[in-house]
Image (tube, rainbow, N blue to C red; front, top):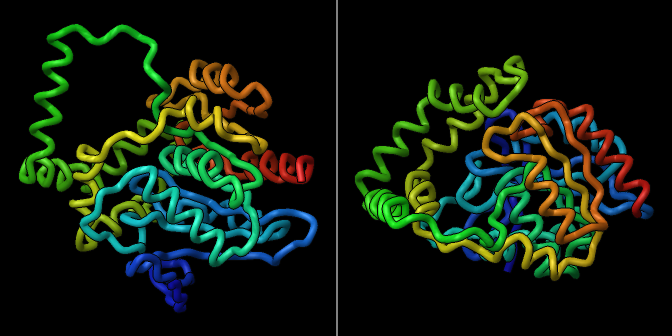
Length: 296
């Protein structure tokens, strides 16, 4: 059973939805339109609904906009669960069915892009379109296995990080405000977009009880279905927005893989890094707006 209660924290007024006994935070803005679908915005790893503030402010003029904190992130609860694509796919599907009440365009950045793709492929009754901004997730491997030494090193590193103390120590390091800023400087082309507010929005949830456990789950959880397997099951329109300055994702190579498996997609390449929605929000908002109005 789902229950919603109003709350306000930080700079965002939103609502807590009870899902599987846990509190899930979301925000909504704008009015419902009979001639166009609502939008559901899904953040990346370590981010939250806060990361969409520049997009919500503008998109609400034309759309009913929702944004959600995935379980384990932002202002949502952080229970000691097994985290992964299947859990978050279920979360989004049930949120759309219960709270939004109609098929939705799901928009995701990075990890959120993979989750958006998962729900579009596995719960087609909930999704009329998917938008991925530098979407994460593995493709099926077609390369030869790594050499034995490389494989051994990867196994050792993974086994160390699976231990509670090394994982906790790494979490304490990466969650420092100075390290968050350094990481953002690596993945944003425009450093003026890296404000104290942005750093604080990423730092704050790391102080919540359970945050370190969620971080550790990255090393424990099994990988979800490969991107190509999800694309083979998906039927809805797909928009890809790529920040070409992303050091974590080769936009050109990855875009080619998506086109290979889903040739009907629409894509745009932007002068931005890993989070184009926050770095060049006006461009992203307009491309998203035009794509939706042309497709639905």
